[in-house]
Image 1 (cartoon, chains in turn yellow, green):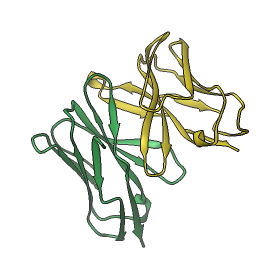
Image 2 (spheres, rainbow over the protein chains, first blue to last red):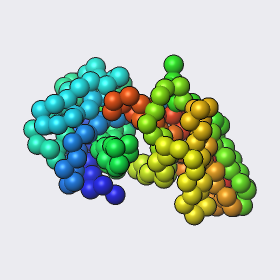
Image 3 (cartoon, chains in turn cyan, yellow):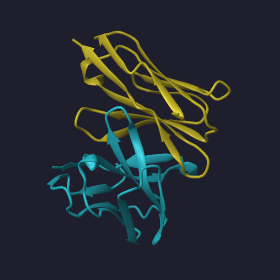
Length: 113
Length: 108
């Protein structure tokens, strides 16, 4: 594995509450990604980061924000959670020869009631 | 539109059968990745390919860059191979595209 952890692993919350998911890596990789996985959609990119304080939006970024104040941590925040954000969230890092590989964290299952 | 298409979406096989999962993509790529996800589990990397063929144990992956197509083969399938197999490609820049996955069930 690539030394990626996610916390929490499971969370149940109520509509309208803020939620922050944390991704932590131990290998000092520059690129980090947040995806959500939903049935019938595969993995969809929410946001990614290409360095400390450098982030950009993915295809499903509405309702989400991210921050990266340290190389090892990439935070995903749902400012006001909605039921449509119930999903499994995966963090990934990019590595390998020429940066062609992605390695994934264990995932966070989020339920918004 | 999906940049990566996989077929079949679902596949059921008897233990011991030879299995093929296909992946077609529409973007220029620098590499293609096969991933495995067991039910309720994390996503594990199986192969990364940029040309030709790779083999790990009973798994074989091939890629045809000209035809923009890759296949994942499993020989002598086993119930523990039951999982979702995901094809992913690295496109321009640092954009990765994912198929929706093929759900494989191997029956003893």
